[in-house]
Length: 142
Image (cartoon, rainbow, N blue to C red):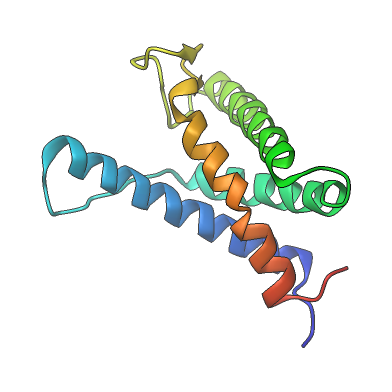
């Protein structure tokens, strides 16, 4: 099979991240309100943020997989996610366009990141499903 190009992988990563965010917010709303409407939400900015971040994690995976254990890579990826979320949120906030605000969370930094989501990021990245699926099943390794 022909490998998927970088733009197509970026696009799939964006869709994946966007879908995960809408699903997560719907599940969170269900947990709080017990409504079966499952009305998840997101912002179009999330598509670009997830697409670029996951593509960069793919690049990190290719460089780190031979030298670091899965656990250490997940720690590195989680730190990257926090840096990326803070940076993109900071830029978007400058333009009054940041769609998230974690100010109500106990362990937030400037309302742009919260440590309360660390376990979700870590476990999701520990499984490394996106990079592995995209690189091993959908496209040939580079």
